Image 1 (cartoon, each protein chain N blue to C red):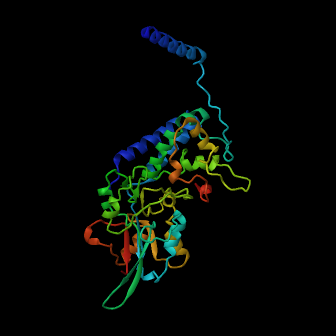
Image 2: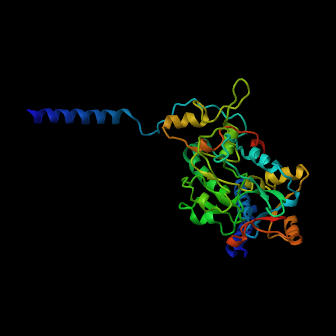
Image 3: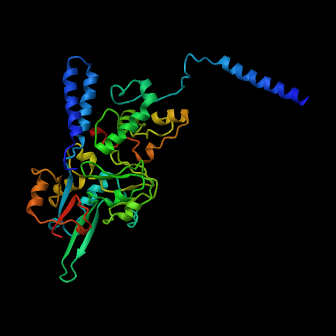
Length: 246
Length: 133
């Protein structure tokens, strides 16, 4: 996935040539169609891999700002049943038994390169986008929940009941599995996930989102400067979410 | 005797079929009699009415994969686009779900007896993010 696809580039070149050729001839509708085609090719670039760095040293005990922002963004309303309520971000509290040091960190879908959920999905509903975001195609999901068992991070939730008042950008329905989607509706338009935005707005700046493959990105710079780990690095999943200070 | 009755029955059935054939014109396809609410937002639909009626499901089906797998946003076709233009508001200014009885999607789907599953998961009202779709 790190190399660019020559087919993509040649298609792009053909499109550009066609656009030039047709510029004098074709109607406005044709040009609009061509412009849209170009948008599609550039929409998810293979060189991009979205990722996140969580600076746990900046995460205050008991802070749930990212979780609250996520719930608001995606319309997740708990029913007071912590075991089955949908959660995209889960706050995990750690305590070092020998020293008594405590830390609290958000754990969401880690957007693995070799995602176990994608491996086990019997219908192909769990998939990884070319830019590294792991998603569920809910049109294809049959709700078997193999992915929930396979995920080492307990990142996925199952919707048990009929829902109403879903958010336009987050379709959710009974009988399907869901998890953090890195707010693709924001990211596709050049934005950042709701949790990252909220964390920065509240002044914590514990979450950094960006392109793992872009040397110019803030994420790339911070990962270079700070020591960071993947949770369960032993599983060799090459996660997109990294932690500093765990 | 029984044979004669059977024959008479068959003749009657054929007669009815031929009558029904002669009474229907095939020059014009049957036109649905629907009281569809007019779109309240947007200047024109993304395609001519005939094309929308015939192909809207394919457009949506195609676009959903483009968006989900390739992250193509703000394309010509989108379910959010349908909802944002065609939802009506009630006397209090609240949005009426587009799949409610008599509303744009539901009116046609009731007429054609096609069950619509979209709004089990998708928002049936524009919601707060419709403006920046």
